[in-house]
Structure formats: structure tokens, C-alpha cells
Length: 130
Image 1: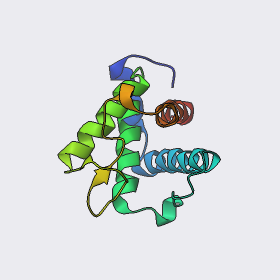
Image 2: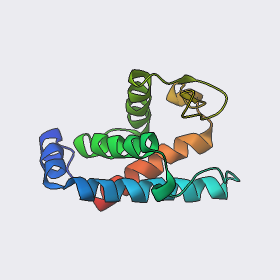
Image 3: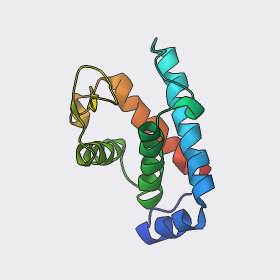
Image 4: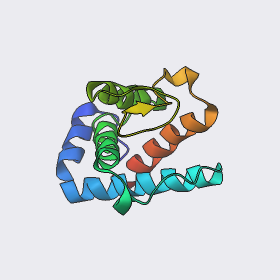
């Protein structure tokens, strides 16, 4: 999807079924997992074993990018973080779904480069598959 018009993006997003959006979210999740493995992080699980909050977070991210295709990686991170805050998540040393802590609950410019690359990767995948 090449359009930068929000109304066009919204129309394109609404033309996708929930199954198609989830399929894009699955690819994003699995690409993130693969990227993490290249960085020595083997803690990420495959989509089918991911917790519901992880799957929903990816789906929400896909919907955000589809609705705002010109959003920067920083804006994507801000959207992700805002949703996490609404869901009760806080900054913590490790990602813990039970405690709702995550080490990436910081402004984009404070993320390590490797974490910022994930937002670039996520955006590129959504736009390529939409």
C-alpha cells in the first residue's frame, strides 16, 4: 500500500478481513522473533504459542500502521506504548506479562538501536503485505 492519505489507508484497512490482518500480524511477530534470534534473544515464542496479549499487541500495531501508513517508527512505538499504558503496563527490567512490565516502555529515542530496528521492520512488513 503506497498511499499516504489517511482516508485511503483507512479504506484499505477496512478492505482487509480480520483474518488477513491477523495473518500480517503473524508475519510481523515471526519476523520480530527471527530478528531477536539474530541478536541472541531466544526468548520469543512462535505466534501459535504467544500469549493473547502478545498477539493482540501485534494486531493493534498492524491496524495502526494500516490506518497511518506514513507513521514513522517513532510514532509506531508511541502508539504501542500508549496502548500498553492503557492496559496497565509499566517500565520494568524484563518483559513480564503477569506483572505487566516491559523494558521498552521508554521514549523512542531512549530505546537501544536494536529495539528501534524492530519498529522499522514492523512498518515495512505491514506496508509490504497490505
